[in-house]
Image (cartoon, helix red, strand yellow):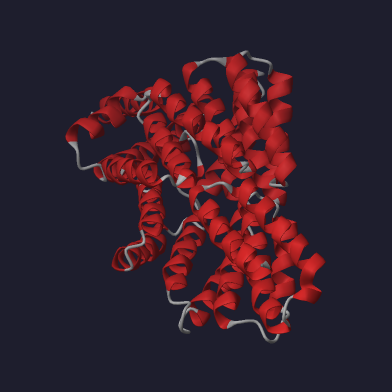
Length: 444
């Protein structure tokens, strides 16, 4: 009776995992493990020996999906310490450790475990994990801003998923190929993959990817200055993440809703969502996501020119992101501090902050800022006011990078919308045009 009951529990739990019912799946597995502990004396040693690690692996997978990373790590370490662990389960454990490394920002840890997964995925009954390992390897490289390697991993994963007729895996690969489109500013590519992913995820009931596709499509709308459409996608994502009990996803959606509100100029809504994102980030223990949410809170306070509160938020964001070894994501916080110093007519401090921003721009990319054109324009304005000759160079570089991004958009209408509709993009190009005309006039 025990074997039959819990064999069904394992199968149902796997369905729950695929459809995003993580809390329900965790409850089911924990109840199965409780029964096992109660009745293990009535179960043959060989049966329990085979069943127990499978149930523990499922528990660790659900804990990871629910952002209980410390608990999941402890379960995985216990499993990996078993010398008799089945190779296929060992591959799954390494894969889950890679996921945890990705979610917690420990990218070297995640990268190493993704490689271990690929090694063990060569054994019989574990080959399906090869595509999963390639997929998470893509996530890790994307987080390291290496979009070329990330795209390669995702494309290899997508091909394997399709060969295996794995529509769930196919959906995830499509989501992240869409996300690469956002990172590389291949917006039409991002829209194409994002819409495919959203349609497939909705069709097969894969709520996690449905939520993720909404986040990506929202980001694309944000980049094209369509704040209302962005907010609608983010709201759909938030609802799905909350239904799944995924705190990390909830944090992402809340912060993005705050950004969309900021783009619309709605300070109250931006402050509300940023504050909620901070709360959830603290609950799940994500320092760098808390830092990003603090940056959004700083933007919200800037809208009402509450300089003291904005300065505190931006300063806290800078501290958190630095401590989380995500200093490359602090460009907007630094720019916010420069903007505040400029508003206070403290040109010396403003220029010092600009120097910090430009030093980071030498090493980072547009991927690391929510509004890079606005950052370039701000830096040029402060340098110009300080009679710093670098002002022209900064404007030129900002426009050159903006046009490089635009060149990656194949669709003419989307490219025009990107360059002309977004106010920061339009303002940057207009500032460069005025500056060039003045410079050309002086040279005549």
